[in-house]
Length: 141
Image (cartoon, rainbow, N blue to C red; front, side, top):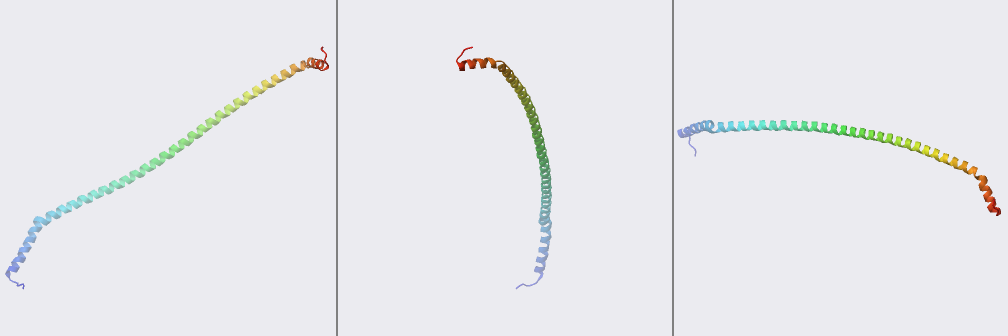
């Protein structure tokens, strides 16, 4: 059994003194170190969160700029295509006009040659007719 006497009071005082000394020598410095470490971890966590937010904002800016650049490049490509198409159509029209003019000149030249050949043959019709009649009839003129 436990008996309450003066040694028990001395042991309780001894334990209280030991707690006060341990608190001053061991527990307080450890708690201070742990508190400083936690503050550093919190600061680092805040820095990480700030960097993550900045990264997200930068990525959004890059995405917007990239989208704008793509749209601008597409517009420039479309305008270049339309300009090239217009230039091609102009050249095609010029070539068609040139071909039409050349065709007209050549048709006029052929018509002229045809008319000359017809006029020349009309002049020789009497000679051909006499010659053929002589051949058919067996006479020579």
